[in-house]
Length: 412
Image 1 (cartoon, rainbow, N blue to C red):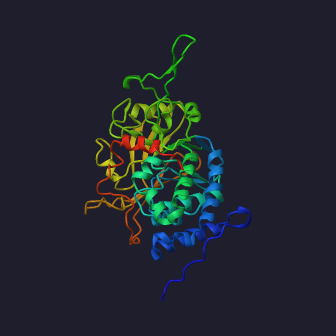
Image 2: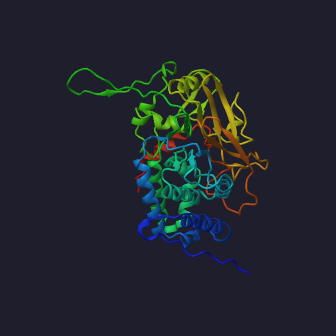
Image 3: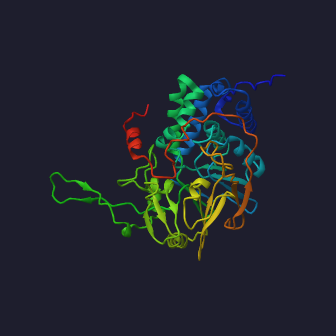
């Protein structure tokens, strides 16, 4: 007996979403992943409904500050922090059901990297946007390094969207990029926990003006690594986040640092040579940041099992999380929520990592409860949207020539 397809999704009159609408969207996407070819997604989610959802969500996101403060919590509240998802829709749906859906007493902070590598990045992102629209002060979506034009053109999301929406694909992709620009960079939970996709960041370079009234120029002097200085929350608030690809040079380095940086066991700040953007920071920087802002935890994401096997001195990602720094003032934690990652890989031997999420509870929300989970199996058959066998690994140095080429293309 042929499965009965759900009805096409309709945007509600007045634009007010309900729990029923959001759950219907999730069910429809799960059904379509098993029963429809990707190019038939518009028959379920028409472009006009996509437009309404993304426009409504973008208006909310762009009004939020670079670092959102989550303080509307009480003794009954808990906060769920989720790491990278990478288009693994079925694992996201499991996580939401396993943990409990967002509600007045359950706040979610999603720490970026919703798209790329997995086959259902678009559906994953739209599910999260629908929850954001429904409960804007109970669901927080932070930006990851893959929410960029460079990464999505390299690791599958652009091609995924074009495959699913055909002649409307460029329009859908452009709207997603615009929404990515509005995603906040970080959060502070209950005044005790800092979360960001990559982590810490440098103090920006101050322009040095040449003397003389005529032909006055602004010069940015590249500092020596030894002179790098840890940035402040005030500087984070003032950074310009509305860039498709955070720059690796110039005066606006904070977004790139927040999205691309990694912890190290070596003290101090240094350029992240392996990635070609962002920083490496040591336990002393973690201690300084926690102590200065009276925080207990830094929770970041950004590194799956493939990245961690290349890092010395840091734990693997087999359980979906690691505690990277334990210092006098608190801890630095990496959380990764895509189990059995990546979905597509060139070698037969898989990492078979678990995914994980963190629950923070009252009274001070700084005692992390770790929950690991296995990948949903089986997952529907799908074809990759990028050349996973030959593309440069996103954990290695970025292809800056490719990023420059992206910058030269009109955003249309």
